[in-house]
Image 1 (cartoon, rainbow, N blue to C red):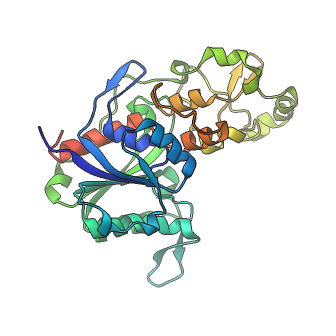
Image 2 (image 1 turned 180 degrees about the horizontal axis):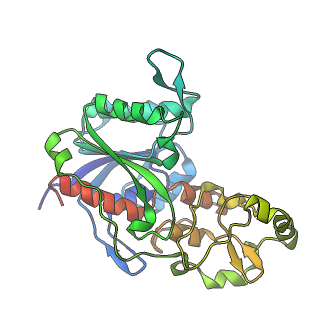
Image 3 (image 1 turned 120 degrees about the horizontal axis):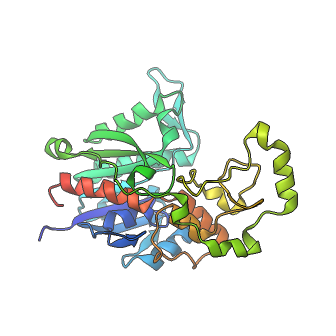
Length: 323
């Protein structure tokens, strides 16, 4: 049996990316087999996400600021993964221009690069929002790739559409993959889209239609109807299509926002946390109940869809000759 691919997970959140990496779960009637990755360390600075994570994994996530993570304290490992925050990137007014940051969140990308430089694992996987490609008028992303390359990696990136991989959601995410050795890089190919696609109707819970807790008031609906045509509000989702991208705002979703909602007859309701989790491709066995409803929505909306990540991880394991 091949040795496990030792993995360190940064910014792990509630564990969507990590669940996809390790595999061994069922979703909408399909088994996503266990993959040859072993997470030896996972960290996040959110205690609520950490509580969810630790309820679902045998290994445990530590509450830690990545800036305080000393690479010298880590045992050698093979893969670094993480969805680094990107809201704070800026291009400083230097000649030549350099990648900077507006606040502390913008520093976190550099911490991922730092760990790569210190430990030189065989590969890394980084995930981020589509907007990263156009940030700072398209100047930030090439510099981000350059920083990964300067850490000693051959790097490739691709915008993946989660619906193509069996997730009932129109979520698009940039997946950056890097390999230290050129032979591993040459062996890697992004996963092909799957034949079995899913739509919102596959994950909606009809019993939620009987619970007033999830419905918007008549006053909220009336206010939305006044501006719906000219402002594209009240974005009711079709059961026959994948859902629009869900976000961490679902706890405060409004009919006058761009967040997706569900229409039942003439009424509108938000998705339940369980529905949101399934839209993100979390299995029914994944537990979120250790935190409040608001914290559940935030954790789910910020997560990486496990099913999409599973396909990426399988492709990486194949490239590492450890399928």
